[in-house]
Image 1 (cartoon, one colour):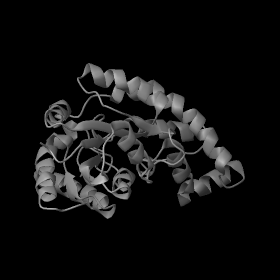
Image 2 (image 1 turned 30 degrees about the horizontal axis):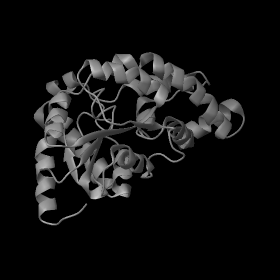
Image 3 (image 1 turned 90 degrees about the vertical axis):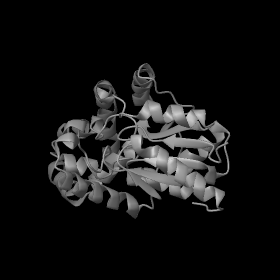
Image 4 (image 1 turned 90 degrees about the horizontal axis):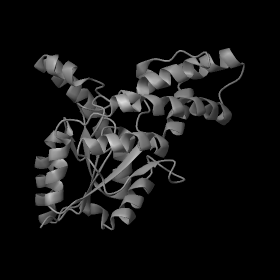
Length: 267
């Protein structure tokens, strides 16, 4: 019988939307509605946060902050975050279905975890309205979760541990050391670390790499190794206990965590 009781997965960049592309163009377009041209790199930097917090973080980036002040005559404030957010959410709702393919290996891995007696939880930086579009598409592909905690469900989201605490309650699992958090962003790793869970960073399919499956397949080994190392380094900064390329590589990590727990180790 497994000593682990649950695995909590992130969504985009972890189990769906290889490369985490769905929000990128929407951030660029939403800011352009306010006369501000932002880059994909600038949009990717705060990924994983609740989307209001993500927009707030973008508006605090020095270049964007200066552009906003020049364009609108004052530094951006909370009301401006609200305004961009109100444009962003419906736009993201409209396009997210185009980026809902499962990362290869997801259903097989989750099936094995369930066979071992583990529950499957999930947290996300998406709002519940966006996830309402995603859940039926994931189900059609064979992926269902036992709970879902979205941005906005709780007063405090990532990087705090509150989303994970809600998972513990929803899934009826404890202690935190019997739960593994899988995520492709630093703040997603943060919430797992803060909650006292084992954490696994996803390097190649996630936001830090920002690559499509075809781009990954076409890369020379040394180039892919460089991308992997850069993405892994960012995730390690946040305290990830393990780094994998994609969710398809998870089972050896689960086995190693089980071994370490049997030896009395904790996260």
